[in-house]
Image (cartoon, rainbow, N blue to C red; front, side, top):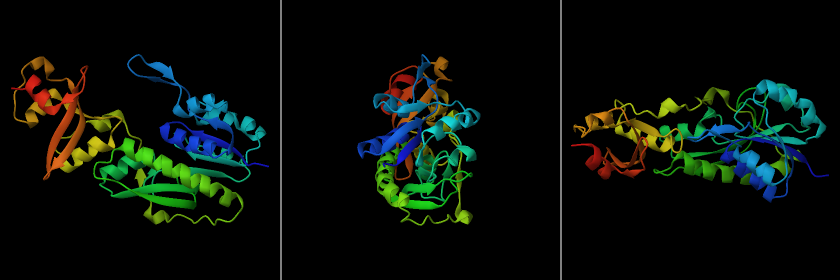
Length: 297
């Protein structure tokens, strides 16, 4: 009998991993994903990428709003008689009583080389810290966050131009690949999960919108890393007035002083920060030279 998998995931990272399971004919009997969220300027309720994939492939969907509501569906999950849970960027803590449901436990696909960068923003942390490599860890979940024993792990290189968006896509592909390779061997009992060295654990926090605001007291290297780490969200920004001040220039129009200026692309040139593309609040993206000609004197 084919193993029965319940998949927990929400964003594109989870969708890519789920697609790999589906492409390799794993028996995904249900997905658990976060509820539809308001997106964009018009705040339209939008399903998660994982939910969209599940609907397209006629997979049963559960969308509990929080940890408490997740606990209330335990009986429904148990009725599906899962062999295994697979969790990939679900975005909520899975209660310990829920983890007891599957026969063979729960595997988490985490985009870092655990025990380094436990928590919500491991990819951003790796870029902000200037790491040249990161990776994916498949771990057996326990009641603590990203704490359980490691089942498999694979490294990838991070390029000097790496953004969270590009690294996430690579890590999701690698995660899916090692997951489908790991599951059969794990279920056959041929793997010995190794405990993490908890003395080496580091932790990351949930990225918030305000994290993207540039502190011009930071050095150029840190600002350039921010531009990559917070791409695509929340983006890195300053104000038009602050940018004029940094360049020792004057504004053509004082009404532009407090407009938000998003830094879309930047690079380092002999240690000096060079901005390539920006976007003024409410306007289309433009080259940095066009911005200075249009807004500064």
